[in-house]
Length: 149
Image 1 (cartoon, rainbow, N blue to C red):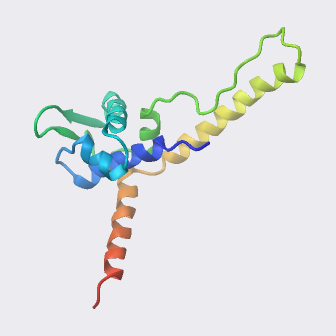
Image 2 (tube, one colour):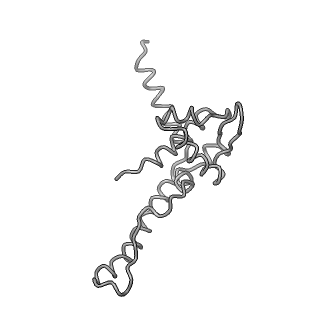
Image 3 (cartoon, one colour):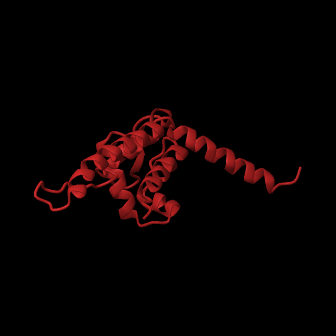
């Protein structure tokens, strides 16, 4: 089962990076993401707690990046979502009847921890600015493909 929350989170910050210094409403971001503004506000709340986003309330308010997109890695975004462990491995009591069940779960917990650590390390190699740079390149290429010389 796929989880799109990270993609939505990156898209959300991508909109802020693309717009620049101007504040952007959650409604505008939600329109870009094709989701409800409440979903965006919940994600933005996590970003405010982690120092990735600043929010200005009231008329003309909205959200903007708290630091340059070059200084925000995809790992920062992933960790800001604070969703807990990616994999859940309930530990069985020593009294559990099956010795395989009692033994395999702590091993799986170690394997899954290593897998998630590798994911975070890999995401740390990419900045939000790099992702938005690629978006801009592809948008420009599409625009150029549709025009005549």
